[in-house]
Image (cartoon, rainbow, N blue to C red):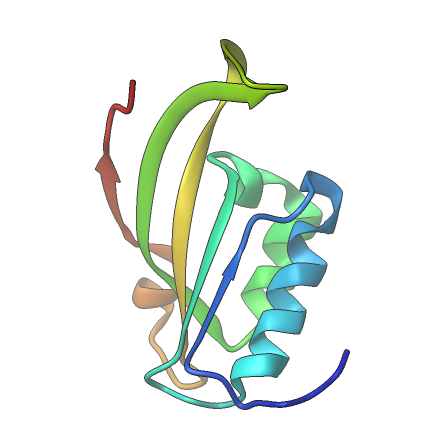
Length: 113
């Protein structure tokens, strides 16, 4: 990865299988900046997977906010419903946060049509 940072924000919509790598690369790009944010679109249940959860637990970040945006899929310009819901996660750097802050976050639900 070309390093020009540290950046104040990273916005990403990674392929599902690259989500955790994208989070790690975003963390490297923002550096240990307590004001930096990582905004990433992922499936709502992305962090429910045991292996991704363990990686998340070891990273110096926390989920500050989750915006649940629904199940719409826009493939080839056609709006259809898909099985899984998506969320926009707002991640922040926090090397010394409490366990309560690391594993609990605010969730807002929005319906987009």
